[in-house]
Image 1: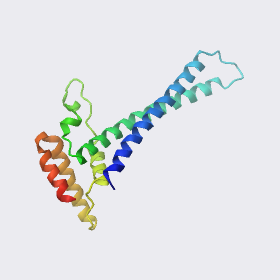
Image 2: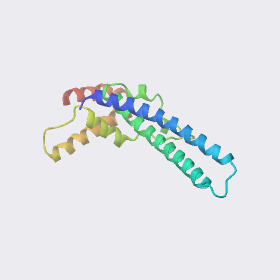
Image 3: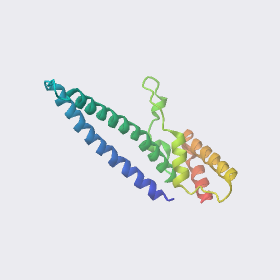
Image 4: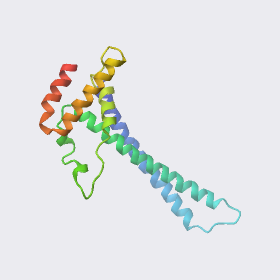
Length: 160
């Protein structure tokens, strides 16, 4: 696959998040409206209210999960485009102690780089595992050592 497909994935994830946000607002508004209404004894008011709030909660959770995937895709895209990691994330959030936020899902970043990058050996399963391990080491070097981008770039170019 090509890096262009990863770029399309990033754009489609962004559009999907905005669509979900729109639907979230709609269901939340519906739930608030139903909450204000007087329930009629013969109506399915509580069922409709539960459906609206459950749908809103499910969409909200899905949008938050998308955020994790978007971050991994952007970091993978930056790696494949030879952008220094510190340009993608200026100061790693997980290093700030009082407000520690988890870093990117590095396993997912590795999978995306493997899928969309030039790292597909034409060998057997053992060779594929060695290639993935080598790629994992390159990504770790890239994000742990800001000056190591040149080595990672050379390794990517050598693998192509």
